[in-house]
Amino acid sequence: MAATKSKGKASEESTGEVEVLPSRGVSMSSRQNAVELVTNLSEIQERFGAPVSWQDIEPTFPVIKKETLEGVPFIIVGFRMNESKEYLHPDEQNPDVLVGNYFMSLLVACYDEDSGDLISPFSIVNDGGTGIRDQVTRYVKRASGDSTVDASKEFFNAAAAKCPPIKIENGLRPSRYDYTDPDTGKVSKATTWYLS
Image (cartoon, rainbow, N blue to C red; front, top):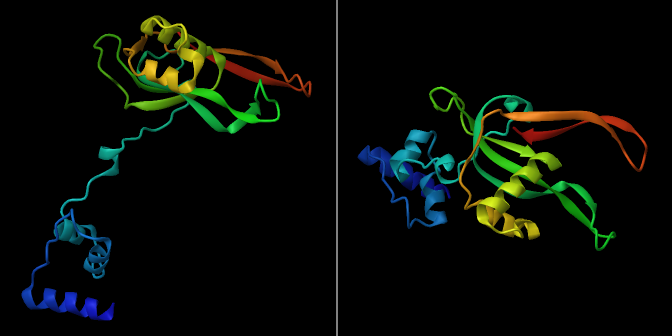
């Protein structure tokens, strides 16, 4: 390693230029040797070319609370069903096996009712209740013409990917109530959210 460092350093000092390496086709060991003396992002760009933002390759969006959309018009441009790894329950066929609860993820943005302009960045809303899930499932069945779309998560998501966006003129509507746990008898506050 020391020899490589001194070679790289001598090369830079003697020529005054940084060797530009092609960003593709360079082995990991060559990249390791090339970055040993790098101290900032501009030097990386000089050697390998401009870095690509991960957001451009695999964009992600912030997750917002449902309360943010209470009564606020928004558009759903995509949605999918996910399986929770955190909240588990016994399988109906085999109670000894725990399976994840399903929840909906919606890709949304708020809009101005008069102009139609989007007035918020796109965000993700997650909901594990039956309200939004049942409403979206009915929509996918109607839009796809297939009454079996909820047969599996994968089948549902494949059908959902073909559905047009949904405009939610009145935002989300909460239904707040007292929930009694059937196992413990403990009463707690609960909320089921609906598209309105």
